[in-house]
Image 1 (tube, protein in one colour):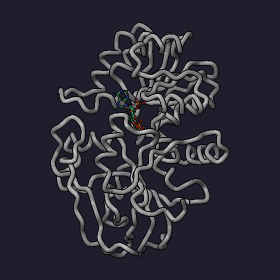
Image 2 (image 1 turned 90 degrees about the vertical axis):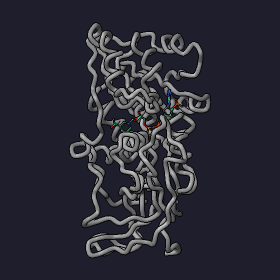
Image 3 (image 1 turned 135 degrees about the vertical axis):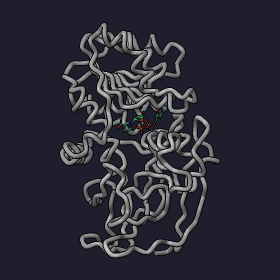
Image 4 (image 1 turned 120 degrees about the vertical axis):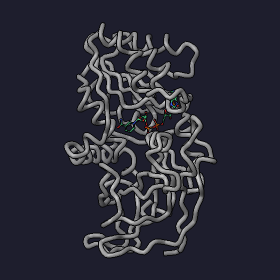
Length: 348
Ligand code: NAP
């Protein structure tokens, strides 16, 4: 072990603003914790930055003074748990810090059970991306909830992001006609290179017209990541018996009106849902872990190995840039799945 201190970002106070700022976070350094019996100390190699983390902070679920929560890929540096040895890699939830304890007496974060990783299967960073909860989110929402059929038109918003890029590729593999919505031109180019049939930028002034042109047969399945004006443009295109997975509404996560953005989304869509008999599936990935995670990981590992599914990471360097990278991810100044390299990955 080369470092003897543990740097952390802690939540300074329950955020008052709409979007994260540096004042929301405190940089703290502590002594490394010592694992007790049935515990291990792991070094964070990669930290995942995800929209839901902002929801926890703003709603007060994450308490001021706590180490900010986050999914991580880690390496065991000291183990007192049988079955885990120094040098093993695992998915866990160390959060926004360089080192963390796992094992007995250390809370497991809900459905995010620690698991060992084999670097021979895929690059270990993918355990917080395509081969982790993000991939499972895309799979659960698209394949399990909406069950797209070959020839149907599937529209995906935030299509180049962590969840979206997996959803568009799964839809293609299912034989669908896929329409991706993204922001900046380089994201549009990336999606076209992936083979997405039609890509539209929500930043263009004539976005709604472009989207309509891109969906000559309407929209059978909509994978919703964004909400707001993107959703407004999709609504008139929904076919009879269309299916939607309501994955997230990231464009609304900076709102300060106190309203529940998912409830607002539902109310906006309701007249169309009634008229077109649209089925809306509310998605929470945690509900799919027990039944689908193992089978998903097996299938997706094969797709990644064969190159049938590609993935793009927006890898930022160093724990110190976490607040900035977090802000960038929430506002679209990212490109692919956003993660931080916190420690050196010997397998990379
Ligand atoms: P991401 O897509 O990698 O990053 C967020 C993206 O949102 C940005 O890159 C940006 O893409 C887009 N965006 C931000 N503000 C926008 C705006 N005002 N208008 C349009 N687009 C905007 O993030 P992710 O981690 O994969 O998450 C995607 C969605 O999935 C989020 O809504 C998240 O809450 C949801 N999610 C839900 C679950 C669940 O269990 N339901 C689990 C995981 C994630 P562009 O630049 O292309 O616009």
